[in-house]
Structures are given as C-alpha cells and as structure tokens.
Image (cartoon, rainbow, N blue to C red; front, top):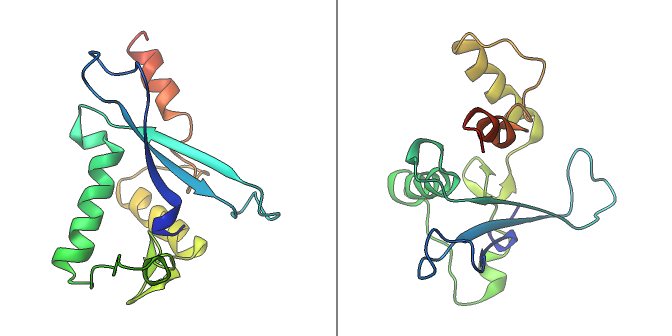
Length: 139
C-alpha cells in the first residue's frame, strides 16, 4: 500500500455535534492474499476517543517515528511521481519496497507469543473486533 492509497473523507452528519467533523481514513487496495486479480477494494476506519485504540493515533505515531525518530527523509510532495511509490509499511531503508506478508505475519506471531496469546489467526486476528467491542458496550 502506497501513501497515495490513503485518503480522508469527511462523513456527513456523523459527528457528535453538527459542527464537529467525522473524518474516515479510507485505504484503497488492489492486491493482497485474497485479491490476486487487482479488483478495487476499500477499507476504512474512524477516530476513537481512546488514544490507545485509535487507528489515526497509531498511524500518526508510526509516521512520527519513521520521519522524526528514524530520520527517514520526508517524501518530496512537489510532484506526485516523487511520493507515489512510497510505501506505508516499508521494508528496510528503501521506502519503495513493501513490508512482506511473511515478515508481517512473523512479527505478529512473535508479539502474540511474547504476550502468551495462542491463536491460529495472525494477520487477521483483529477482524471482527469492532463488532465485539460494540456488543460488549451494548451498542
């Protein structure tokens, strides 16, 4: 997924008050383990008041670390050809090489093992968590 595959969309009439925006982060995906034919798929997420589970916060902290702590050069936004190849999740120092599925899976497996969590699911372990959280909260 490249930086250009991330977009924000304001959802009309969804804020807690009429004068409060409700931005959604939309990801455009054309390839993946279950999408080998390049069909257009989208996924999205909303901000959460709890920063420990907020996807906007997580992405912001990741980008802060990447560009301010690890000192990766910030993409040149003057021309799209300069930043369109930049991967959101990169592998190594080259920002145009995507983090591989197997490396991603192995990292999650190590984290789950360290936390003492046993699961057959790795990369999709969080699927359905929003519905479960809403159910727990009686929403």
